[in-house]
Length: 108
Image (cartoon, rainbow, N blue to C red):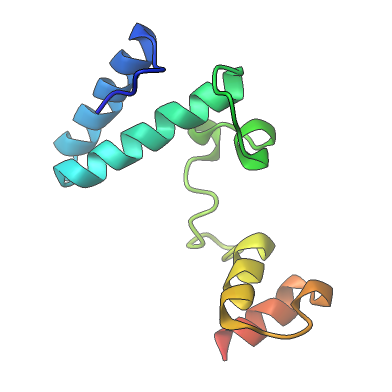
């Protein structure tokens, strides 16, 4: 589902990412969503997008990051991920908590 704003390069990139994901066994819908997000993030990083989130422009590229934020590594989830979980759970005092305190509060 290439977007109208995408140029030919981004359409090729979308198709390449999507085909790679389907080859690895992802369902078609999931592969399309991941490919779209990947292309949109690249567009934001290069200044092609009209709007871009802070993480899209200031974060390391998805290729270099390589799953570091998946929460499955030795450091576990990031403080931002824990904070978002605490916010969804309505935990009071979360803004002043350390990562360890957030882990304990969310893990309850």
